Length: 292
Ligand SMILES: [Zn+2]
Image 1 (spheres, rainbow, N blue to C red):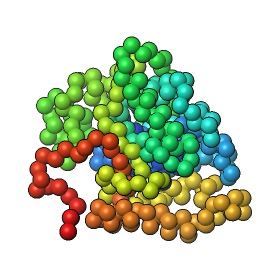
Image 2 (cartoon, rainbow, N blue to C red):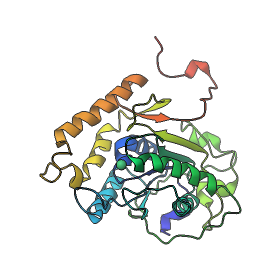
Image 3 (tube, rainbow, N blue to C red):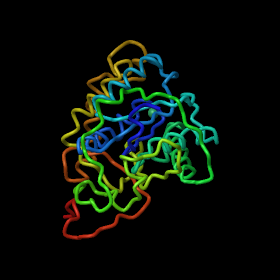
Image 4 (cartoon, rainbow, N blue to C red):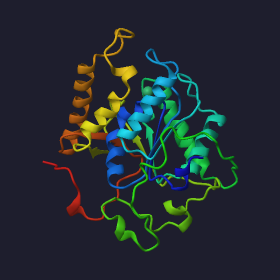
């Protein structure tokens, strides 16, 4: 694996297609990276079925988008574009990544949608996350390189050790309760079982009420720039002009959606998520979002 794989990821987003993450949860990933967390993106397909551009074009565009979003790791699997299927083989491909990258938080697509690849990616990701925790499931190490270089995005944060939860205040969680081998600094190179602590679903593609939104007001412009890094898809051109909106229209749409979810949260721009669990509150005085 790449040299940066010795550090566990804090947040990993999985999506069917290159640019799905940029459209649904990139502001959140950027915000986490800016807070010193290690973020990653796993694209299940390489985009070879796209109307515009080749898989190679999309690989370089995805690498550029990753750089803009300050992600530490990004890779694309070889699952056929337009044919994301929930098979044992595909689950194992994702298990391998989860065990290598060991994310604390996993972002999956919402489990319903128009595009079969999107909702299948959701179920596939969930089932892989479950399998990944099974001690008796043995999965060999992979040799696929990350599409982004290793050194530049490794943050300078120190990984908290046992009893050092105060050093991650404001980040919403702490690794302090975990065993030492679960912490980022000492993630094992062998593929030991690993299950993400939290799974959240990026729901922007689906008209569903989110359980929470993430304020991306400060990240919105950079997030939009990461989407525009997909020049083969979003630059105004003749190919596919019947199905692809012009760039000005894309900007308006992306902004409208972010404003809509921002209004729900009482901020300017936000991204929507669904979680299956209830929210746990420690202090009712600190619950955000005005009621009346
Ligand atoms: Zn997609």
